[in-house]
Image (cartoon, rainbow, N blue to C red; front, side, top):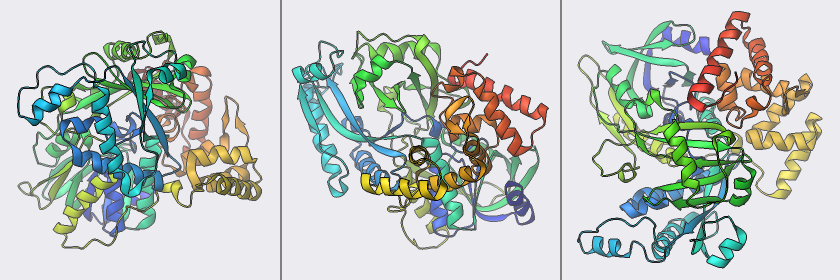
Length: 566
């Protein structure tokens, strides 16, 4: 399929829209283009969702703290999009009770009054007071009234909070709990957006491992990163959704820009049962003495802690360094001082660069997380405009894609054909939403495939209703567990490699599954070779190619994720 698409582009290079960057925003606008049956090609120099979109905090949220900076529109939009995701992607998006640990009742009072009276606010207090949190949560709840999916907030006394979580800091005066969401497989959701677009329109074509090279005489040169071969396309418009690499991509398009001022956010995934027990199925949201908001939440059975917010110039050098690790571990001590956390418990790290709008701000936390689409006219010698998608949050990707699409519709003199607001994503289509419906769905697929209901339940969590296809494939080939990972089977891995455009071994262990981040490769060092053997069989890799794939993956895991397999 991949070679066929590239060959057709060689023969017919004229296209309406080239989308550069197959992260969450690029995939979102690509789906919008498919909805309107616009001839579009989505490319990424790496895999689908391999950059910033692979490194969110696994939260689906509107950004409660941004109310403090007056970004009410951003928060209102985020609440709306969070609720839509709970409806449209119920296989990957789940409610997340979020508990704010309170250390003060009145901190921040003068700052709010002074801001209202246009007076100097003075130094910001280290902790937000309970009354400020109450105001923010009231607004948060109001924003969700139109399409409420989850309960409203509530407060808990000091005695109740410490009774439930004895490990909390003794200075805790109480807690406030509200609801947001969490995402199990963000990379898979992004991939499904792209695949949905292709299923929606024959004019939509998505290619991973195709890079943008240069522009000349209306032609954009692209490079197939798997073969090294180059080809050209002639677009009428280019959507630059390259995230932290937007300015670099614009330079190749002949549009020099300084639109992005990225900050990186580092995270640690731990093997720490004591911390997991203290989380008790909820995310803890708390502050450090310098006023930084940090989080700890359970993700796929392991505690995830983060994040940092550090200016970075070169997004290609992004990884969670030693100072960040010390900082993130130290942050937990501010809320759970007696729980022991050390480097030996780190299963993996990940870090991404937020593609924030270039602006002047006193701190990185004050840099706007809002999104907008910058439009620049044709460069000399070219006839296409460039639409640069600039924004710093994961949750409102659908709304951002719609916003960019509206600008493209104006250029092409088209009217909107419909909305993606109520459009299911991937395996979220026809997803069983009640316990009874789920049990019936599992029983039906178990009977038709011959696989055990427990196995179907696992597949439903991983793939949503696409699990029916996976189950049929596995049943046909004999669904035997992997020798070194009892939860996955050889046919299941074969299905992923064969049907989800796995080009490299790291695509499989980092983005189609969470095997690497969860520390399962370290738990059994032979697992990587077992997975490699399946991928090599599907792709017919030579021994030399397989060895290169293994070396590539080991290096990526070591450099980017602090995973050592040596």
